[in-house]
Length: 174
Image 1 (cartoon, rainbow, N blue to C red):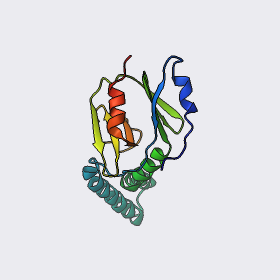
Image 2: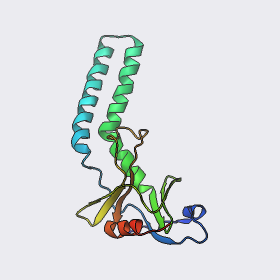
Image 3: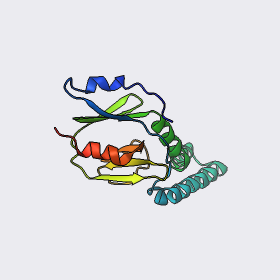
Image 4: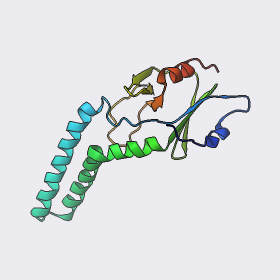
């Protein structure tokens, strides 16, 4: 069941002679992706090493700088082990999409990303068993460890009828 959502945020980004073709939000959350086949083992090793380091420097009463650096790596390890899933969940619950004849708009926590249509980059689609899917435009240069490393990927995540939405994206004209 979809929750009603106010799309008035999109109005300033839409020309007067442009019309909205589709609006949507993530309908489900798929926390695990193919990237996690590498990320989960890596994050466990990172966190384990950082924890081992931090315990060691505290027990050995090492200089404060070693404790601070170890603490920073421990926090990063905690984020890539568990926090990134919580971050993704919160982000998806606060995301909305609009497709018009000219642009694709993505609003996450009030930060609007505008992409001109038609899409000129490679487009992939991942379909899930629950009928939702993710449309990925562009290709990731590397695996995202942290949210502040951005790559060339734009995605409409966990949307209903992804094949239909992809056909809208690919059939638009300038």
